[in-house]
Image (cartoon, rainbow over all chains, first blue to last red; front, side, top):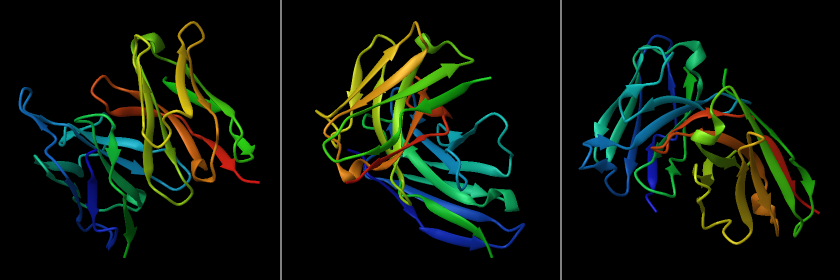
Length: 113
Length: 117
């Protein structure tokens, strides 16, 4: 199974400042035949189900604000919130879909400083 | 509007069985892969099982031999039969629409399964 490891486990950022979350996979999730990274990011607010934010490592889901961006390739990925808003307080998870079983990172809790 | 509504959770004793259901609407259910993902209290997300459009399925090692995923396209409903339940199966169980690539683009609100004596 591909192990997904996120860092940090939690971070506190001031409103309007940048938040950066890292995700590392134990093996590549870049499919050579498609040149796509099979990596997604989800946002989960308290008491709610997860919500898809980013897929293909850098494609924003429809309706997601453009302050959210994804980057990286191969085994190292980043989710960036360029200007943190109060409504962005949540736990963020990365997930690989390169193979089955699909696996998630342990989550990163984002709070307001 | 895509809607996924899970039912069937509850309190069950260790060793017992439960069947979860997920009623889907707002999209072509039969044309989509569907998955179950669970979340233990205060913990992260764990993918459980996927069922493909043709009925083939894949299940996580942690529940293989105890859980079975199925679907009824005539009822637009996804199921998870859970047998020989253990305390560590206690979680909120979400059904999710699974794109053909393995991204979960829609999620239900979840149903809580508590395994305890």
